[in-house]
Image (tube, rainbow, N blue to C red):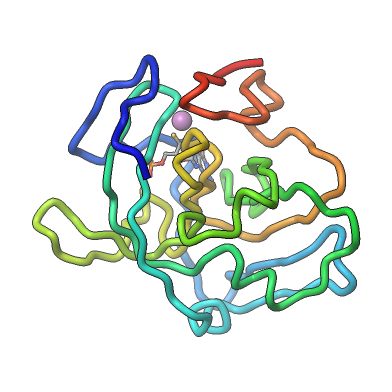
Length: 196
Ligand SMILES: Nc1nc2c(c(=O)[nH]1)N[C@H]1C(S)=C(S)[C@@H](COP(=O)(O)O)O[C@H]1N2
Ligand SMILES: [Mo]
């Protein structure tokens, strides 16, 4: 973790809210998390099955492409790599797409990321955060309850799908929601990779 402000960013203490479309209304009986794409066998997990996975607590800086950065955010969640332990991916998988709800469509939002960047403690599907008073809180519906992805600080925050619904494993890179609209595939804030 580096406390250096990436070029063109300013620091904020508050956690702003940004997304397209409606806030997803959580329903445990219909919520699923799907592991699919280049895998030997697809897997669908219930909310309970996901929440029983091992927990990780880590501090991750957030850099939003709209120019705010928020440092030292403590999150509790499930590391990306825990999901890799549940499935067999095909040889040659190098990319993933992490999906989230968009106006009722569970796969309406997505962001692409390179698999090898997501194997550490700083690549987390989060459900709790430590607020300004240092109290642990569930993340609010507007921040992605019941589960949202926080990418490593080497990626702009649009790569962090809220209201996540699954991970697709891919051999070739492929645009997600913002990438199709002209945003960067690699999205490194320290290289100011905003657009392409
Ligand atoms: N499902 C979904 N996830 C999303 C978005 C969205 O529109 N839909 N917006 C992204 C963008 S552009 C940003 S900057 C972050 C903002 O997260 P925050 O509102 O918790 O700060 O969520 C990302 N995840
Ligand atoms: Mo964003």
